[in-house]
Length: 113
Image 1 (spheres, one colour):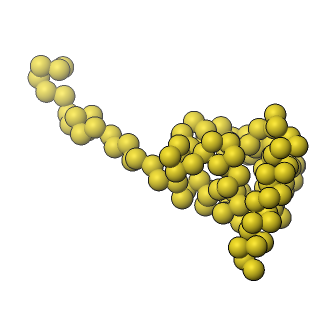
Image 2 (cartoon, rainbow, N blue to C red):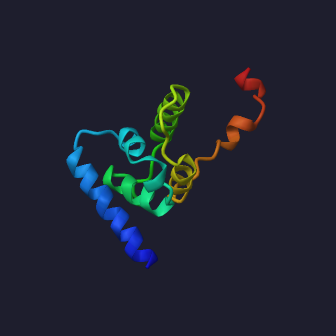
């Protein structure tokens, strides 16, 4: 039953996205509202429709831009998507961790000062 419900939500998302082809990710999330976006798997499949997949995980600037727009919309009093599900969906993508180079943490030597 759960897979049928998830498949039904996925079909609805595909249908809505095809009706609104020029809609941004944030606009579609807001349009769908918290009822549809309450499932992280559904949000993840929706992200896939916008090219965000395991093979192409979200870039930092995409996440920052999405969250910035959502926060502005929240301040304006708009009905939000389920932001918790969005965060869970985004955090499930596999990403390479970018470490700070160790040379950046070492104090300068005499030749560098």
